[in-house]
Image (tube, rainbow, N blue to C red; front, side):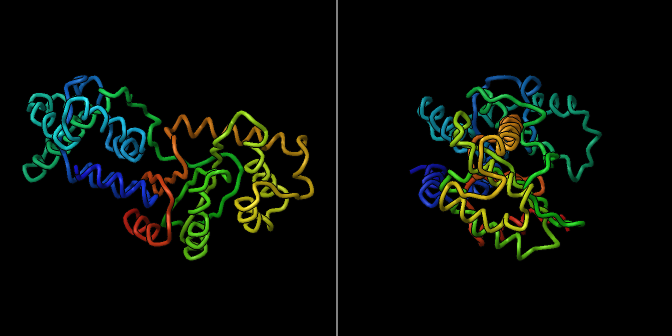
Length: 294
């Protein structure tokens, strides 16, 4: 079985976050792809590539495209790597206005650009498009559930929904990490309802935001109850009229998340690095170690 497929099966079966797989794909297999667009026309940033490869749907599309060529994903990358010429790399470097390279770094920079061109061609061939917002570092501006530090080592943004079983699976570990690194971590909760078309689909997140606004001391306790029950009764956060402004906020956060490229939950951004999938404490410790700013 193809190594990439094994990794995918491991991720799906264990519901482990995909960030480990993303690093393996980018740095372990720098190859592949057909000539969909020239790198001058559709060059994805390293940030965008990391983000897209953290999306299981995008990975599935890449694997299916490879199978359509009767190739493994690794073979497709190797094939495309061979198609990237020195002139392609030079043109891409010139377009981005790269300054003259030092002799000791030139080969590394050229290899990094080759990798970006390969992934850009592959992603373009399955219909993905580069966007300035895609995978962008994001700090929520709207008032909502958050635990802040004045000088954080980590800034975490979480997109989740109380109706999501994998979000529920992560919730306990998330709370423990917030408590363990209190004073060192800023954590923002953002809404991403799985059902945006019904009041029931929006209700748990609306209640949560309402509790944060009106009964903040009860917020942490309410999170566990909302994951267990889906809805709870809290004075001032019960009627449609009381919840209406918070439902509007939930929908606004959902639209913002979609513009950033969020497709699956739970999704997290840790110091600008995207992680998709349920997290346990060990996964969080690895993620924090890999993204520490100090």
